[in-house]
Amino acid sequence: MQLSEEQIRSRKSRSKAMAVALLVFMVLVFVVTVVKLSDNVALRAF
Image (cartoon, rainbow, N blue to C red):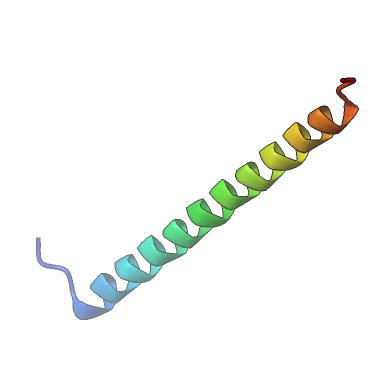
């Protein structure tokens, strides 16, 4: 099966969008984790 140029462009566009979405999700998880860990450290009694 041979893809047309439009289908190839569409596939690349979707791939880039998925990569960006995954990157944003990873950053969000990282930020939430850091915030939660820093809250726990701040509450710890020394």
